[in-house]
Length: 183
Image (cartoon, rainbow, N blue to C red; front, side, top):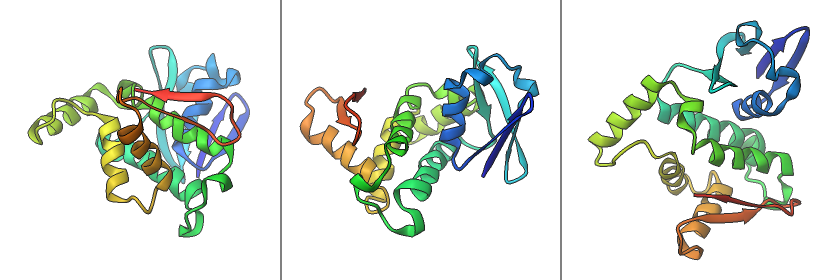
């Protein structure tokens, strides 16, 4: 459980993606100095900072493990609560939007990670024969490895591989009329 407090306000979140969505989108926190925001994860402090004027967090660890932890958190909280995979129609619209936020954030690695973490991830990628850290590839590899665990991500990525010749995926969030696209 994440606890966020600032200027006399307190908020609780189940996942880091919810924290990031709040920091990016909520007007009540946008003008607050990052140093005046307290964020904890089960009583352990988490650093809040600004990247290009937008509030974000910095956590220790590798970029790969941190990104996968974002997916694991929403999987456990909203897609497979109690280790039982929900059907797509059973998942609330706001929880689908968290998954789409993960795809959006995959395009902005410096929003999620420090420059040192990105540099380390790029070095690791080069050692394994890839050019640079590719969070979309990481999502695809993870969904292939744990296909039964995250059927939603797997089905979105399968759609991208088989149905979209341009290499771009698109899908509609259940209950949402807006089509989402990601490179």
